[in-house]
View 1 (tube, helix red, strand yellow):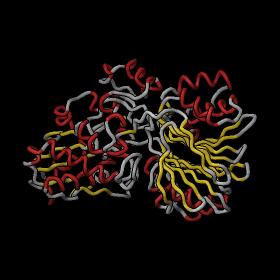
View 2 (view 1 turned 180 degrees about the vertical axis):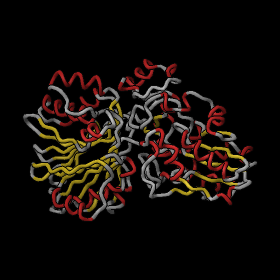
View 3 (view 1 turned 90 degrees about the vertical axis):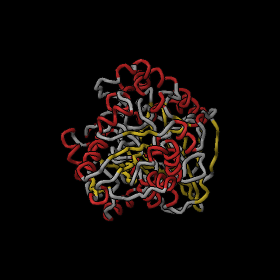
View 4 (view 1 turned 135 degrees about the vertical axis):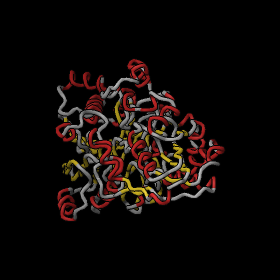
Length: 494
């Protein structure tokens, strides 16, 4: 997607039953998940009851000297890590510093380290409740809310993880694929919200077990036996590598459909599917080709906004036989992403980041394939460049349906004001971004391409049908009538 909307986090955790060093496994695993969070990174290891942590803002380091220093510091046979993007709290340096994960927190009986991917919908209410019980918070991130909830429940239930996680699942609403280290008994625990909104998988390599957001983090380490943390499940691993699974609450699957269209790596295999994500993206384009067969009959050339729309563009070429040319090229060395630039700089960043081979598009009727449209500003800038390159007509084909509602579960689109689809029809959007037409995926086409069924997907950003109760109340209270207002505060933080 050319607009580079971000996700909450990528997580990776590893447990070794031998003396084998876990750092290199954890490092390579997290590096393969850096697409899920690029504002900060963190590693925490557990060595005989003692935590060691290294964290910083920015991307995961690749300089060999820095990596060697990290390895020397992070001793132990268990570790968890996190690549973060903030979807709660502020984006100032102080807030980002405070929100780095993993978070290490203690009470009188135990110390926990916690890393998670997702977003807590009722964080504000829980923060007030927990502040009254155990004092003020040290950060404005929802990670501390989740960690203090668990710490308090472990205290109440005398260290019984099954009872404590049961209470977490009953009282904490939102998306959370979570991993925890407990120094009191050198144990690892993975659990997931009952909807299973964010992905979560695990695998084994000899006497080592690893848990992570996406399967390529296992592949890069040569792990085998891909399996998934089920919604509402707790998996505990002790220091000897013994794994125990407990279905704590009934699963009510509602996995984020946006993961399949944009967020997840194309080589990931997500929960419940039997094919890699890139094959699903090709199928999304097959659906577009079927829906807009007549309009595509007028097209000379298929092009795509690299790189997340490339698989869909190939799928459209495959379904129609229309040539696909990769004439839009991204400068990989322009690293300042458009969505974090100041408003006055955004167009300039977009202009420098994308280059178009003008001779190929000149005089052509183009099918421009995108994976989604959120704000529309980047699409408008790229269409303008295509017009300057001499394109005869530009018809935008979007593999994800129109996004009209904010996400409360960990995607950085939590205000109505930034969603062009909440204010305008497809025809109006086409006019605003300079396209001859905008052609969205249908809900039915999305469901069919993913193959999990409509009862197993969250499509709230498309149809406003949120899978959790408090989220429905928050959106109803804020009201869609506010969608034309430029409100910058996230709907769950007002």
